[in-house]
Image 1 (cartoon, rainbow, N blue to C red):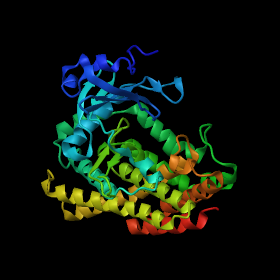
Image 2: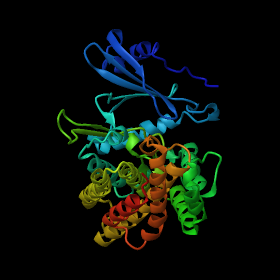
Image 3: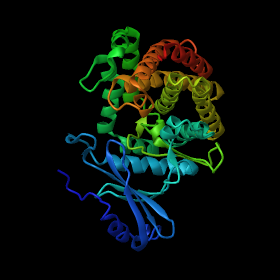
Length: 408
């Protein structure tokens, strides 16, 4: 059982009142709305607003997985990892992360900027909306993190301390099992439609896929390149556009409790995978033009990443050995690894636990083809990434396979 008090809608005003730095941001005596909006698997999330229109988000980590209850214990110290990463990333790209107001280590509560005037990007994509600029912004975010939290920008002692502080074994184990091992090897947590049984059998019998997931898991567990977000999908991004526009005036990454020093390409691959999943939904609904637009997000994110990392490159700490040839080789390595991690993230969402609404909200007859296409694409990607990892090749390959496998 927990040894700390959980927040509730009734206790939020008192909590704000007890912390002057929070009471300076929002008036606890004139709160007009307090809502618990946590729809994830792990946390309580409260949005509060006062009579003056000011808002605040309070997020509290539970000591177990929320969707299953106390039968699946989970360290609430993940809140510290989240706040540490939010602060480190906000320092690099303040426009792309919410501001943290307070962290309470006794009750594992993060008080932060209210983003209720934004919407979750996944929901917007499912609704058929366009938020131009969001994909580029996420590439910029990953590029800033890749440089600013790595050996290119941090001295050796500071980097060593940051790596040690970020060790996050419980949440990393979730990723290692659910993303890399269980989809290819089998698990009671796996599930799929009966019509996809042959697709799953073929996927799990594919030796190239098994070898690739073993390599991906090894990279994930050993490569400490940067303080990555660790769960950067379209459900971890908030977007906002002015009324009547399709171009974002604000994009924010959030929900980084899986953050740790890991392989930089994992975050890129997670984004690529979710764009492909959004495209698979659009193809399933015979919205081909929209599907192609969803796939173009891959190119936009890579372009944003590439541009931001190159922009920061001249300030690297040791230009004696990290020259331009090294830069080009590094970017090529990351691009190939992004394909690998994207294949892992795509397939786990089709076979393993914690699926996506993009696909699950489709009628079963359409869902079957979308899942089939994503699994076939993942199998091709792990092979072709070593032959041609250009993002244009990925979008072309994805478009061809997803269109061909849809059902109606």
